[in-house]
Length: 168
Length: 138
Image (cartoon, rainbow over all chains, first blue to last red; front, side, top):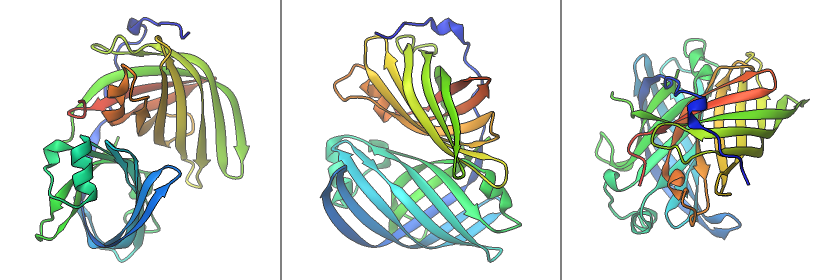
């Protein structure tokens, strides 16, 4: 049995700063259902393109894939690798994982690509970006968190948009 | 752009049982320590019963943390924390991730949270401070 510990042992520390990084918008190309695997239902969602835009940061999504897993009826776990072309011409690699949680009916709607409301679910991710760019080398040292929403992108096509912050 | 609000959730003090290097990785094993919830989460207390960080030592001198912390709450509920971080080897480094608890547990609300925070090593102990992104709770 674990030993209870008084919470007063440690006063709450200040939270980390969340510094706005940018908006990542991506649309899909095709999906490849893998069916039930050892960890749950798996589907590969290939990324057709998109954009990344933020203060001093612009890029084009050139491809990638989400190895989406449904381990439980009320949860999806995205596992993405996204390739980017930054405005300086350098390539970048954005890797993220996280979870999408919501009621079972909403998760079922999302898997079936039926319309959903962002307030009915939550998508949170943890991301890292790697690049050889001198100008954007700071991205290599950033731990990024984001929250996502499914729906129309700024150009009107369906996709997913992530608001990204750098953890300071 | 307004960031998500962060609410203090819990602290963890995890004792490091082993610290080994392996082909560019730094393998830490945790054994022992305790944790506790902050205001409003006082029931979230217990012990660190295991876990590991298979982080990567990078060429830029930073360490990419990839940790699984295994906790046992006071009522015996196991809690697995999946946390990533990036920063100096001894910290402080920002962290981000989530918790995994059995759905039948009274602590299953942890499953819906997204966690961010920071961690720091001091001698053979790592201290983690975690916050919940507001609006994630059921």
